[in-house]
Length: 246
Ligand SMILES: Cc1cc2nc3c(=O)[nH]c(=O)nc-3n(C[C@H](O)[C@H](O)[C@H](O)COP(=O)(O)OP(=O)(O)OC[C@H]3O[C@@H](n4cnc5c(N)ncnc54)[C@H](O)[C@@H]3O)c2cc1C
Image (cartoon, rainbow, N blue to C red; front, side):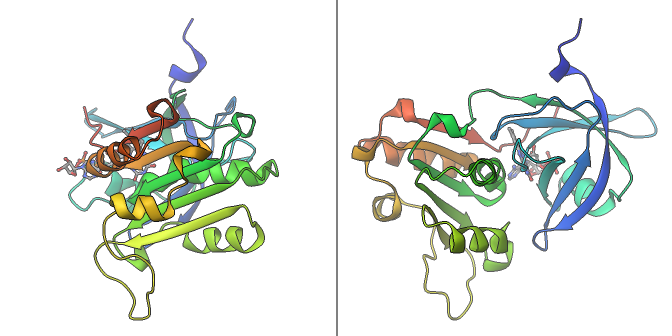
């Protein structure tokens, strides 16, 4: 008998929500979805008329408590799958997916904290699922998100994060912009480095649970810096959003 999570199922696109000029959230109705943990992902498979198939991984953005499954896809202009998902897919279309996948890069409110989340670009997606889960269950685990984006316009979930921070004193979000920034921007405007982690990261003495997600170079640089500054490697979980094509 096939395991539930390895079965391909046909999800229906209920809504498409633009998040940034390049990123879109796909709100999906998945028949017989048995739930997921914050941080897990699904595989999405596209099949062309001639039978050619392409498969990619996408993190789940929604909290386990949400009724619908949400993925957020950032378009790579020269990509095979992501431009289809952001620009061609329409509401009421069907999308083939399987999952949830991954048990390591997950957080449940019972795992406690404090939490240090570090994201680059669309790497914020699984971390947002953790933040949404935390909010859904009323957790007050101290949580800090350090989030690197190319520009202000490309900050995914910017408004939602602002709203959450405004009503939750135990959640902090620090942005850094690596390419362009608004004239009145007073925040960081460089790649995440040791000094930035020192300034905004939680001290190793607080023994935070740390989740780092994004492009491979960012993940490796951040994880190395955290270990060098005394954090227990066993407390640092990483997810690399490298190419997943087959
Ligand atoms: C566990 C996991 C979870 C993921 N979750 C998400 C998610 O929530 N949202 C999301 O938008 N993406 C996510 N990704 C990345 C996603 O799987 C695809 O790699 C991405 O959408 C590009 O696919 P593509 O077919 O458009 O590009 P491809 O045709 O595969 O690649 C086009 C070009 O871009 C390069 N490239 C491929 N992937 C990346 C990348 N991630 N960053 C930079 N360059 C790349 C390739 O080397 C190639 O030169 C995740 C990846 C993994 C492994």
